[in-house]
Image (cartoon, rainbow, N blue to C red):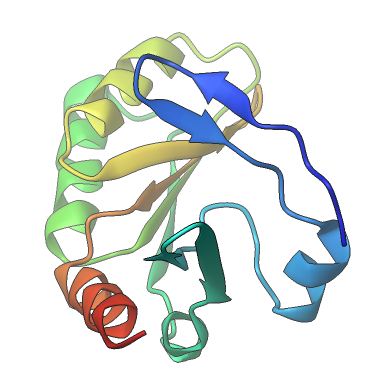
Length: 141
């Protein structure tokens, strides 16, 4: 049995770290969804194998030499076209870094998963089809 420490995060959330061998065995990565079913005094945690089979749509947007307005249009177009992951390539010390992050934050369900000085990667966590599969899997458990 592996013992983990419960960490408080904000006012209503608690976090437990996952054992790395289990994460790797289930081919999970940062941002992937897992199912948690409440079974009285136990929680049942499942890797969403259905979710992993679905190919995510990913796009890379090169932000070099583009105006902020043009980037906004490109980012929102990718979002509306159903891209699950939007990667934005930037020049070192890009002047639009904060504004690009703000554009992504204003899109429902988009979460910035990773950022470096030359890249911002955001994932759409608001996939209705996946959410319904997770709900049905947890209710049948």
